[in-house]
Image (tube, rainbow, N blue to C red; front, top):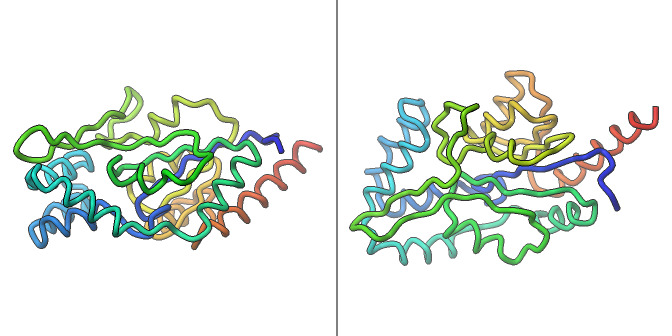
Length: 226
C-alpha cells in the first residue's frame, strides 16, 4: 500500500518504545542516590537536558561501560505491539524514524531485530577518558535554543513531510510535539498535550498506535476525496 496522506512518524525510545526510561535506569544503577539531585535539576529545568545528562555520565568511570551495556541489554523491555507497528509502517510506506534522547549502546541493540525502521538517531558515549563523556551528534540548529542534546525538531527539519506524527511520553518530546500534526502520547507528554490543546491521542501500547493511525489515514483520505 502507498501513503497517500503523506504521514511521516518520529518516535521516541525511552518510556515510549521501551517501557521505562533507560537513561534513568542506567544512571540510577550506576550512581544510586547520587543521581537524584541532577534528576531534580533536569525536571525543574534548572539545567538543560544536555547539561544534566552530561553531568550524570561524567560521574561514571569509563571502566564500567561494559557493565552498563550488559545491564541495559538485560533490563530493556519493548512495549507490546511494536513489531506489528513497524510492520504496519513498512506495509503502508510510512517513514518511521526513531529520535532518542538516549544512547546508541542500548537503543540500537534493542531495535536490531525490527526490520523496516528508516533511521535511528541517538547519542553516543566516549569511553577514552577516565570518566564517560556524552557526545551529542545532533545538536540544536539555528531555529532551536533549547540546548536539547539530541534536538528532535532539528532532526524533523532534515526530512520533508506532509503530515508529521510524533509518538512520545516525556519532556524531551515537547518541542517536536509542538510542530506535529498529530501527537500520540502517554504520561507527561499526554498531560502537556491536553493542557496546551495539542492534537493529541492517548496510547497504552503500539496496537493502540496502529488503530489511531488507521483512523487518521481514513479521515484524511476522506477529506482528500472531497
